[in-house]
Image 1 (cartoon, rainbow, N blue to C red):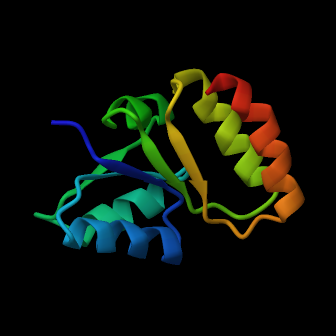
Image 2 (image 1 turned 90 degrees about the horizontal axis):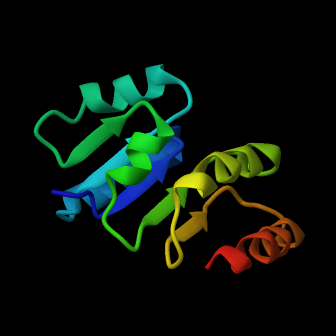
Length: 118
């Protein structure tokens, strides 16, 4: 079975979004660039619908298509880094939602960079 939604960034906000979606019956894939936050979340969610991934490629491939990915990462360069890591594994129609409080000009720039990919 594929996960219905993914969350990248497991700080306070990302962890709670993942928990909330799982509590509503969603199969949630989670990924964080540091293993400790992933392990902390998974350690508190035994029996829930949260599935940890430690490689971004595995995370992306675990999601049903079109993929829906929440980025709960610090605004600015960290978002750009995560998007750059994701792009090689995404397909036309996949959706990335930036929850990192990015400046609107950064959002517009990212949109312009990604729209040709679908």
